[in-house]
Image (cartoon, rainbow, N blue to C red; front, side):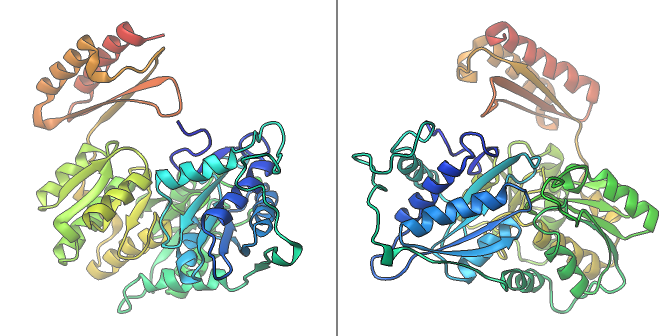
Length: 462
């Protein structure tokens, strides 16, 4: 069982275990050790979002990396997908992102990309974790400890260097604009863009403006503590209000590291990740550009997405929750479009990870190509009512091993038929079970969800 890495790197409250300077130093050493080259200098790119704690984490990581003889390339505040892009564009051996994504500023996290711009597989993260924990980081960092593979200190002349790259943002900005069709422009569009006081606060407005849009910019004054605070994709109602007030054509809301996107149409209605996947997948199918006529989403995506895609000859394949699992499935089977309801949207023809700005440009291209407003385009998908019941559990046995629970699930599945969907799973981080039921009738799915939840409470409830 892994002790540090979760589904998206290491994450926690800044300056509390495991998000401490000591762990960051060890992680820097472990990354430099794992990605080292025998015949040339190893180069590790380090970027961050706008959290106050990002300063000490980037310096702690640099201390660890350079102490192992590798060089550090600082690129400053940039979206997570920007770090993934620059890792390959600048030919680094690995890229490190310091960000807790949509979490409040008190939290921070560290995630790593390989030289190919993709997140590391589980087995590599486990190897890094074992290197980090070769000593007990909770007490002290005894790097001279016997058996510690990071214990050998280099001679002073072999220590690595660290330098800051001032053109990194411009390079990513050029890449983002290149994903928008050259034959199109954004002239005549008024756009509200909310950068969540996060990593995209400079690059998102600049890229959209250079493509011709008239902008109203929100959440672009980070102070180290206001990232995701009443702004961005977690709180899109503020952008929605501004769209209505200003008569804008749409709103673009990003999260703190800009790998997530929620849109607002010109009527102030939210357009989530499922709806974006539906309209992009169907349009790409129409243009003959959807590989395998398939979109990849997680088990949490709404049944309405599946129905909408099927109506246009597009197949939906589902993975477990987490954008890394979506990307892994896409790579394994050669698919190019996927994502999550929460707004992580992956277009592998353009990017190696979820990119909110790139995803927004794909929708804007459809709007400009068709001449249709977002309020019309979004009608391609109708969201089915969805009920989610969370309950505390004392243990987590396999769902299928609990006869009464499985019987309740079978009864509900038979009742819903092809018009509904049931998902029962455990939380990966809490002692909770989650029962989700979708269907065309809200009253019925409420009853169905509670029947299954009651069976679970009797079996394993607290």
